[in-house]
Length: 82
Image (cartoon, rainbow, N blue to C red; front, side, top):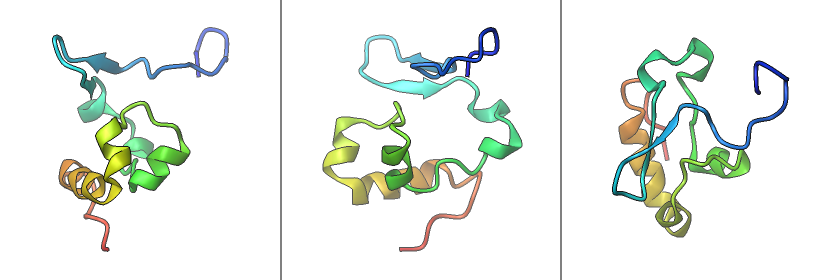
């Protein structure tokens, strides 16, 4: 939500494009609020939320994407048991 006018944002304001790549990184990842530390839990949750961090390859192979997500989130939460 935009703190100035309360409208829904179209793109996460902390999402930063990696120069020269079709990849984005979260600029608030290490400083994120406690409520956000365990999000996302599943690729399905990211799809339901229309998360802009999803890549085409994630949609094509959600099982591998979940494994990659679990590795990425290992410092924030235990991996999701399959």
